[in-house]
Length: 301
Image 1: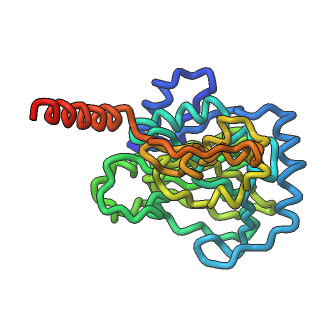
Image 2: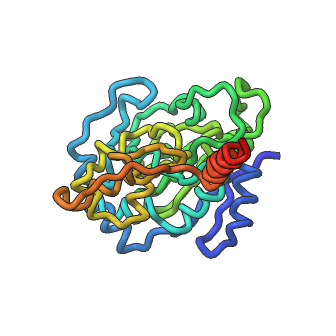
């Protein structure tokens, strides 16, 4: 029996309980993550971005939908949203066992205007063309900037579809639910979950902001080094820099001049680059054992 709505939790809910809901349904709504002042501040920052944005060119993104990008560089509230401890903890629980560090996959504002048709149902993780999938590659948090309803294009989801063995199976109407949210709520859903933007039958746009996360060794959907270049990233908190990808992912992924990418934030005149190994602890042990064994054999020869 499919749930009639996506289950809600609070930021005070235990992470184990949250994970239980996500494991069962593939999605959960976290209520009231943003405060009223933060919501007002968010509107001041992003409303003007949508005002100057054009409608999308393409059936998938929607000819009656506006999208804005590079939000970490454009909004202080979006920076807080991306690094929200409760949301990041959920992401680490899902993705963390399969990588050393998670990273931001994309930041995207989506405004569905009146008359918009329902988006084609899809799984977001198909952007990664892997034939074998043994874990989640990505997870999204859709933040409600305006109220989400069944009339104005609230996100449509097929709970449990992340577990369907037949990935070509399409959900029936009674297997779908719509996420109804208030501003400041966040819908967390797996990249393997079937979903899509809803039809807007209302008289007003529906505005949401996606903060997506993925495994640290995958290429990001949004190129964060262009979206948030070093001259902006250097002034951000270190945990957010890491989420953007300004960090080594062992073994040896993402180096800059043989070192941590954050070295680019230092005074260029004081930099002294030394290339070093960026291996996992297990790899370091294997390498060390190899050379110790080699020296032992040489000594006994």
